[in-house]
Image: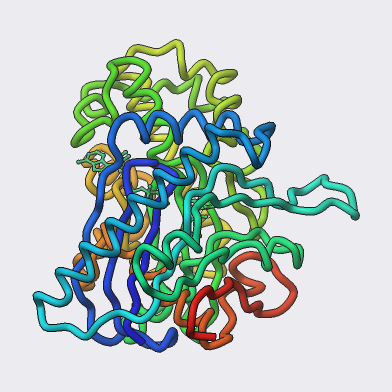
Length: 374
Ligand SMILES: Nc1ncnc2c1ncn2[C@@H]1O[C@H](COP(=O)(O)OP(=O)(O)OP(=O)(O)O)[C@@H](O)[C@H]1O
Ligand SMILES: CC(=O)N[C@H]1[C@@H]2OC[C@@H](O2)[C@@H](O)[C@@H]1O[C@H](C)C(=O)O
């Protein structure tokens, strides 16, 4: 199948799109990719929506407006990719993999009662996207898993496995977006995946708060500062780090802990250095849950563009840490490409989540398809 995969991640910086030929198990031809950045007003409104999400009503005009603007940007991304693919002589896509934008993620956590139910919320109007692109749309990838008692995240691990076919194992694939997530691929095809902890999210908030910038470009702020040992020590005691997988995070889950640990009282430089070091410490803590150490870490997502982050990871982890480009992958498009693979799996009725990834009791299908395909 020819699919346009879309991902709007927790960094809220824009939508990534990628044209992929795949049957959901193997990756065929890879077509054009792009990131369509959100205009500052949409970025600001989505950030505000994260705060409002726990109490907002489904019919709230602000929510409806954010959903419509977000969907429009996704349609624009699909149409641009389609035009680029046509220019490159590629066949037309038949399906879109539409993740949407997570505005709230509250899966089951340790200590929840036996009758507790998880909850996850991705906004985006699949019907409107199908109409404005003329394509079938696979969407709502996380709900079935959460309803079955899974974490609903991360979902990209099965796609990581497809990309990593042929690479030496054990291998760790680390995505550093707003939140970090890791996939450990074992030598016998085993898969263990979970969210590591905060990655760029709190750092972006810090750059905004202390300097009015969207993010710490090239890690300049962090590289000029010193991580604060006392703040780090308090953060390292957070129970999430020791908690056994499966586990996953909301974009704001560490906000209170960061405030209470005193991270917001530091200078802009020391605050950034502390947040970068903490993101790396979370990854090192994640590695303690692996069945055996990986041969190497392949890093995707915007965090790999931050030299302070890559340096902190190299200093904290025992194995080589490299951007996914060393394996010939595209670290900016990997999530969008992964949602193309997930869309193919949805369309074919193949499982998208597993006991080792979201903690469901058996491999689970997921996602819905709107349009002619199913
Ligand atoms: N040159 C750079 N220097 C420093 N940081 C960067 C650079 N480029 C990108 N980033 C960081 O990467 C972030 C975007 O990462 P990415 O696009 O992987 O996130 P995402 O897809 O929204 O997140 P998620 O993986 O949580 O879904 C930016 O918000 C910024 O913090
Ligand atoms: C609920 C949600 O949207 N989670 C995202 C987020 O961003 C990174 C991390 O937290 C990961 O668990 C997930 O995204 C990736 C794409 C996933 O589901 O695999």
